[in-house]
Length: 383
Image (cartoon, rainbow, N blue to C red):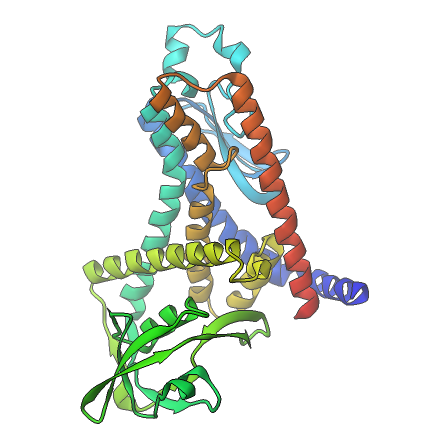
């Protein structure tokens, strides 16, 4: 296995530009808008911003704007940060020594002395900006390319599949699953893929009559067009390719915006559902990926089209926005947790409690990064 991993990593190195350029493009967009959310709301609240950085580490290039903010690019492209006046670190850890010497004018510009609601708004603005970016991208794709829908009609039933055991037949039109109306084959796929091991009540139309069927999706190992292995819940039915079952619809801007919101929520819901299943032991955690997997996916989708790469940026933006809302100290959600406690108590947690919280958060984030990177290497060895 060690030799396979080394050979795969060597292959990755030989194609570094193929992976690195799309990876930097996608991640830079997502990180920029995340930090821009923090930046804009901070400015709106009167907080001085010292640094706006894309990436970590020593500065490669940068400039000062007319407000004195240093905009810079750093060499480690695994995130970014906005450093506010009164912060000691890029993680918005307050500089207590400096804060004790601030005069009234400086306190008005410092994050630490802002009311808790303003601080919460500044912190929450980053993830919210990620969600807005995703909605705009999804909506733009729908407006430009319209929407193709495939009728939820069954064309083939795989022998020995859950669908065959449930009594599905070619020609069946799926109407609803567990009471939820099905308008397209994609609607059905989305429900089935997240329902491994769950018995689904499915209403179908057959020869003009409505029939009730029950089927339990089975977890299957599949490969995409790039050879990546993934696990998904399947019933074992094929969609109908008949011209009458394939429809194309232009999408108006208002409708595209609604679809963008729905698509963003779908990514959130799918992510939370998967994580919940991992926690209760119903899904394997090997689908959790890190920067290596993101780089690989970026290169792969970039080889398909620029639109596919932008779509990946939207999905990644939702994922990063959601991750940052987790109540883990060091992440935005951890800051919001501390602010919520402060609002309830009427005073912030002690410096010691916050310090311990940030250390625990750092350990959790570090362990997640190591685990995700390990998954990435195993994934490369298996692909």
